[in-house]
Image 1 (cartoon, helix red, strand yellow):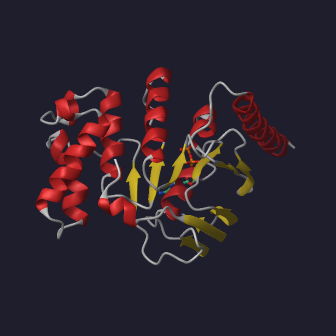
Image 2 (tube, protein in one colour):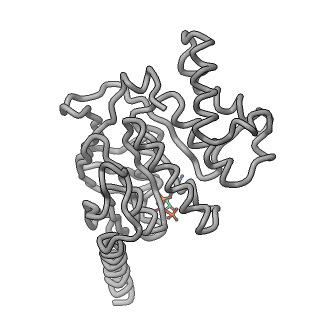
Amino acid sequence: MTTTSSKLRHAAGLQVRRLSVSYGPEPVLKDLSFTLPAGASLAIVGESGCGKTTLLTTLAGLLEKDSGDVVWCDASGAAIPRLHSSFVWQNLGLLPWKTVRDNLALPLKLRNARRNPAESTTLRDAMLDELGLSRFADRTPAELSGGQRQRLAIGRALIAAPDVLFMDEPFSALDALRRERLQDFLADMQRRRPLTMIFVTHDIPEAVFLASHILLLAASPPRVLELYENPSWESDRHSGDRESPKYAEAIRHVHARLREACAAANKGASA
Ligand SMILES: Nc1ncnc2c1ncn2[C@@H]1O[C@H](COP(=O)(O)OP(=O)(O)OP(=O)(O)O)[C@@H](O)[C@H]1O
């Protein structure tokens, strides 16, 4: 589906310069810098507690930084003053008392109060169709399967055509097969609209399948190990190819870098 509003929007690029964030005296993120081109997909990976969610929520503007810059720009490099973004949380944040149809329509109501109601209805029904949820439109989220709920949450995040989609481990509660199906679904959704996606995952194959760039973080001291440009990600598919040797190679690379960092941290701790 290409909506009127999505035609007007452009995926955003990102420049992060010397970003520091703390909750207490010790910074969780310190002097972190990287650049992401417009329309890219960024996976944030790293050991537990290294600051992945902290970085995601800071980039989304939901957490205050101590210092540094987070600058969003369009494909020509011009700064975007007011970013239009959506967030899919781990618990999905669907409203349990509302129907699938009403959950989906919520962002249109909140963000586009002036939109013509008929246009909102058309957008909502087209999205229900795209999500494969038309038959379930009158159900509540509790009456859906886990995968259907995840699709609804992603559809709700995308319906108002954000520049950036933030996701914090949205598929972590699913088994491996349903997870792969949703990864395919997400790549497919992304192919159809201009969008920058930034997400946290513990699943390295998921990062390599969905992300053009993978940010490897480490703790103690907090740092970027590498911003890895994923050689297996193909822009026309908006994903990697699980069958390709490059895909396996990218997974090996990310595993090896994280293992090295973990081993170095353990050595430092026991020295
Ligand atoms: N609200 C908070 N107040 C104080 N400390 C916090 C808060 N949130 C996170 N932290 C601490 O900041 C550090 C980074 O947390 P964060 O959740 O960003 O890590 P993460 O890499 O996403 O972890 P995980 O992979 O386990 O989800 C951790 O040491 C955590 O205990």
